[in-house]
Image 1 (cartoon, rainbow, N blue to C red):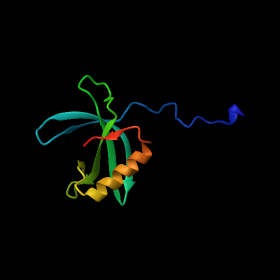
Image 2 (cartoon, rainbow, N blue to C red; image 1 turned 90 degrees about the horizontal axis):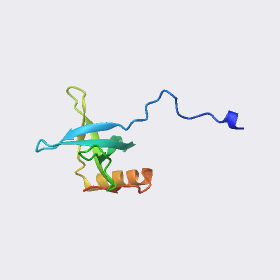
Image 3 (cartoon, one colour; image 1 turned 120 degrees about the vertical axis):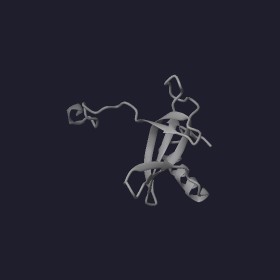
Length: 107
């Protein structure tokens, strides 16, 4: 029976975390690990967890949610905060379900 079980992971696949660096309005740079991404109502959203300055994971369990938007002029993706309360609540609920409550939303 064990011979019938196929490993769902490709041996050559890289399992290192997806990291991105974002700069806030004050010019401060912060590194994040991408926890999850989802599509909801025609938009794509990402959940990020801040990485500490020493490179360790943030152990607070708090995450940040951003919408992935596309610049129509040059077709480049960028991240936006979610200003609409109803949209924000729906996205957070979807991520909480996906992440099984493992993390708390960082306000």
